[in-house]
Image (cartoon, rainbow, N blue to C red; front, top):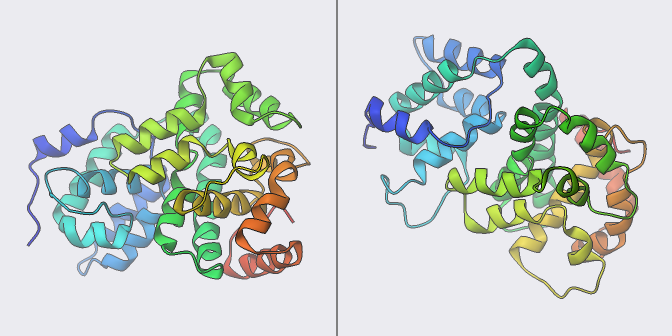
Amino acid sequence: MPPQLTDEQIQHVLQGIRVPPQPQILVDLQMEQAMPSSDNSQIARLIRQDVSLSGMMLKFVNSPFYGLKNKITSIEQALDLLGPTTVVNIVNGLSIKGEMSDEAIVRLTRFWDTATDIAMASATIAKQIGARNPDEAYALGLFHNAGIPLMLTRFRDYEDVMIEAYGQSETAITDTENRYFNTNHAVVGYYTAKSWNLPRHICETIAEHHGSDRIFCNGDSTQGQKKTLLAILKIAEHLCGNYRILGQQSDDYEWRRIEKGVLEYVGLSSYDLETMAENFRDLGIEIHGH
């Protein structure tokens, strides 16, 4: 039987860095919980679609309160460990704080849509290339841009700067952000993920996810888990058209620079990507890159 958290403990965990949840997901979750026979798999499916709710679930379950030896990245496991009462309390706590203006909701819709698609694509790519843990690829896909809504909230002109950043053919997206704001969404995302108690290697991959030129182009000999996760993420971002949706560009300059190195590392060809893109469409994942 998982320990039940008091309202006070819930509020304590809800403090700190927070990405606003999607209003519709909160509504759907509250509807599901109001059903006489609430379905855990349906609740997990809804939570998995939302960056904020997923982050909060993992923050709770990976907190010292539960004393787990290994940090988990699976929402299903988190739900089993937390139990329905705590899940209801977290959702209610977030919905109270999640009141946003219509303008803010419109600005964040593009972010939410890309996060879910990239997460699904990442998990599918991980399975296809035989990566060890598709759950981790899903978590990275969902959380890698968690810094964006916080930057949007903090800086009025952030959207314009992001479009300019994606339009640079030679320099990293984060270089442009650093020039304007002395920080960037990858760094902010790293601290967000850390505050959610995500595994350290996922936090570090979030911090480095626009430093892929260094890892895949310059003869860098980095191997292992983080490099594989980053390669999966970069393929997913490209296929899901991050450069079009967030960057408003017709060309994916970052992918152009790293494509050869990434594909060599995971053992895929351009033809394999075309096939993947078709499969993703069949799965209902929005594909804009191909």
